[in-house]
Image (cartoon, helix red, strand yellow):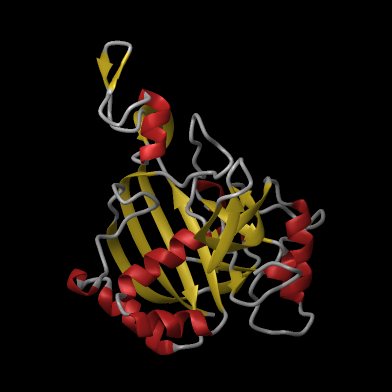
Length: 292
């Protein structure tokens, strides 16, 4: 299967686990939504982005890092209501004889990945999309902004973009480096396999998914902008806002060798034989089992 492989490196990255607060924990690799945003940034054109999102496509993500550190920072709130609640007056910024940031400030710990390398694999029916990504990655003047992984301060450097063939293999030498990379392994109904019929690939993948070690996550994918309403505590004042309503891909977070399906048989899987690892592709853009 022909795919576009994009490689990035970054001195630091943070992919926040939404449910974590203090410390703000990070996934060891970017969610699908972050990878899609990075691709859109490289395309740098609304029409090209619409073309990418118009059809369903396949997306795979691999990542590795050297170590995790804790970053200590402040969260601040610039709303006037928050300022009044903290200081009781718009003119005041002093709390217990210390001058603070307007709106108040709260200390928070952030987990940060260091010396990060990320591979993104894209299989798209529109060759114009892959061609444009491969061309634009070397032309920063076409990007919307600097490339970053997660937070805007986590600058990323492109290390290459090339069309490669993912090879179907069950030879251990073709996926012997599997445990060196974190990646998402989507549920069988959310994975991408070109042939729609029940094949050896699909049967092996279903068995492999059951045997693979790794916690199951709902990984953010595409989103729609939706307006929401809520009322204040008094129940009188109605407020509205526009939020991102994400769809999710159920996937295991795995970093392990490929297990045997039985006593002597390895599964037939797609592999990047250059770095010797399997690549698990998720189908993005088509709702499967209530998820996208």
